[in-house]
Image (cartoon, rainbow, N blue to C red):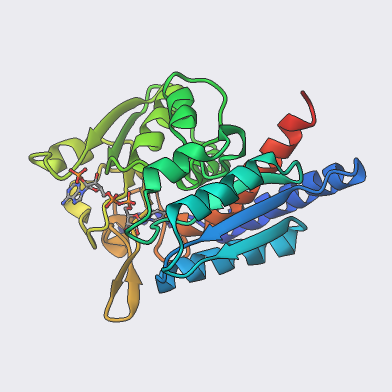
Length: 285
Ligand code: NAP
C-alpha cells in the first residue's frame, strides 16, 4: 500500500494565529494603543480590489482600525507622495500599505522608498529587505513570513535541511531565501534560467515554489518525505491551480500545501501580525 503524505491544514494554523493576534491586539487596546493600517489603492485591477477588501475584512475581524485611500487614473505621483508623507507623520497610523501594482504612470520604486521603513507593513522597503539579508530583526514580507508560520506550526526544524526555493521575486523568493538562511538551512535558489530544475528539486527536504507556472512541479521531481509549499496562484478555466501537482506529489512527500486553501491564507494574517509587531515595538522602545 502506498503511504500518502498529508495536505497541510493551513486553515487551522491561520485560526490559531488569529486567536493569538486578537489577544495581542486586546493587550495593546488595554494600554490605549489602537493601531491603524492605511491602505492605498491606485490601480483599476479587480484582483487588487479583492486583496484590499480581504485585508480590510481581517483587520475589522481582529479589531485593527483601517483607512482606505482609493485613487483613479488621474492621480499624480506627487499626490500619492504627499499622502504617504502625511501618513508617515500621523502617529495613529502604524502601517502603510501600497497595493501593487500601481497605475503604470506612477513610479512604484519611488513611492515605496518614501514610506517610513518603520511603517512598511509589507516589508518591501529596501532598508527592511537589506536588514533581512544581514540577519537583523525587521519587518518581513507577508507571504514568506506566512510560510515560516506554516513550517513552525508543523514543528519543522530548518537547521541543516536542504531548502530549495523556485522563484526570486522581491516579494516572495528573495525574502524567503534569507528567512531560510537565517534559520540555518542550506539554501538553493532556482529561476527561469535554471537548467535541469529536477536535479535541484529532487534533493530538497523543503521545497518552496513561487513561479506562477501551473503544475511546474510534479511527482517525479520531489524527494521522498519532502515538505512542499506551493505559493503559486494560477487561474485556469475559472479554477485556481498552484505551481505544484498536489495530488501527484502527495504519493511521495510528507506534507504539501494546497491551492486554494494553502499559503495564500497565511499572507493576510501575516500582514496583521506585522502591524501588531510594529505597534508592540514602538510602544516598547
Ligand atoms: P514573479 O515576480 O513573476 O516571479 C516569478 C519567479 O519564478 C521568477 O523569479 C522567475 O524567474 C521564476 N520562474 C518563472 N518560470 C519559471 C520556470 N519555468 N522555472 C523556474 N522558475 C521560473 O512572481 P511572484 O510575485 O513571486 O509570484 C509567484 C506566484 O505566486 C504567482 O502565481 C503569484 O500569483 C503567487 N503569489 C501568491 C501569493 C500568496 O499569498 N499565496 C503571494 C504572492 C504571489 P526569473 O527571475 O528568471 O524571471
